[in-house]
Length: 224
Image (cartoon, rainbow, N blue to C red; front, side, top):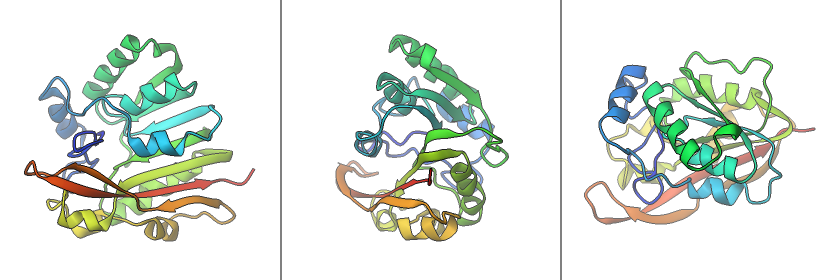
């Protein structure tokens, strides 16, 4: 899937741009259309939200060209970078070699609509700007929570509904979510809500104009 690093961090990246954009062919074509689709920078909310965490094993969901996975690996995390597009993962693997962290990252190709975490447990599961229709989101996001190890964190970042009127006018309203929406959809009984915020950042809008983006940021900790 994608990384949204164009409008300041990602921008036009969304995982699931519209409802029919969930298949491998779409994303392979997208990633094959340019040398770099995204900026190559890690998501700023990832940087901010992991600053106080002890590195362990991380799952980067929708790894795209690998910016977040590479950044995590450089901080000492052992990373699984998951994406539907082998084209994207090929680029990500090349970036990891350049950054000298290839030995800390395992790249996996999978369709999130079918992927199951199994018995795997991660100290951090991170998903940034993975915008799915609400019905699919309610299927996928609980699986991400199940992949979190006891004492580990789930970090979800996406466009706040306010962005529908600014940088994401091409999205239907049901692609957006707040922290409260996510908490209502996830089975997180006993989990600690460490961050439920909607910070703003300055970026470039779809027509090249200055724009203010509001990110939905939810970080929750699974009980030990």
